[in-house]
Length: 351
Image (cartoon, rainbow, N blue to C red; front, side):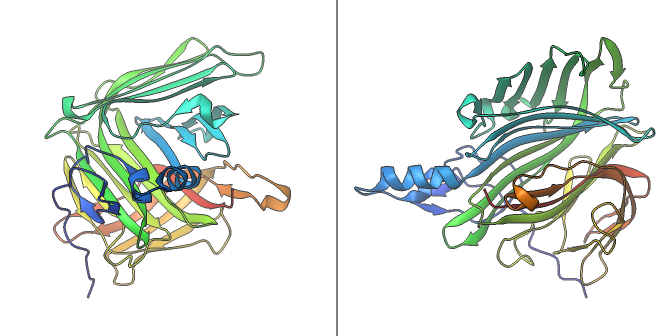
């Protein structure tokens, strides 16, 4: 028998209260994202906050697209380094175009909280701004690149609808240990807007667009490592449906995991999963739970990597794009993922 985790509950007012994380899984935004308050108080609090901040991995990312395109982007602060990234994948041609740059981390901002905030950065011709207006039911993504002799001009402007009834939210505060946590806020929603590459309009198709918000702040152990897959589509009726499946370093994954399916504005939690890649990162991935609720295969068609250090010692990162097949059973809903497109990550980072 499959054991499902508890249902998501109403969120607390703050991520941290009186120096302690509010561990749990929630169905809406946490207003006050204050991870450094976990450093506590007292005469050395300032030093502890600074040390904790240096170890905090923070990013706001998005995945968006329509029937033909899948776009991933991020404003990423690893503290030792920052990253701005927009990757555009043609699902059917199995091609990828990249706009990305590494930069000193003080030159970018990752929002803490999603009410009237912005995650943004600009460097080497690439500018990304993610606007968060969750109480107003809106997420905006704007990214531009002026183009070079080798890289075409980019002009991306997307608005996601996360108003009540349009999008479902999954917010987690899950323990690595007693006072180190993974906070993540994921939401899938309908979206519309424009994407120009080299001046040519390539999307999004009217009534077909989708967007995933991925807000992330983690006190990860070292090395930081996880396996993650996600897929999303918009049905002919206009309903956004998709999934998020992760095998990470949190304690007690039977209770604390971010595995779920989205169907419209409904989010259904799932049991813990494992990810197997018998033929390596470019072969077929198998994502399953122990009770048969999750049985998904991921077949990569587009390769993407980012390694750091000799023999990948500082960072080993594989992020293929491709097609899913299989079925996911939640307690009160089932999602067939045949023909769904998305991305997977296998990550191990020491820095």
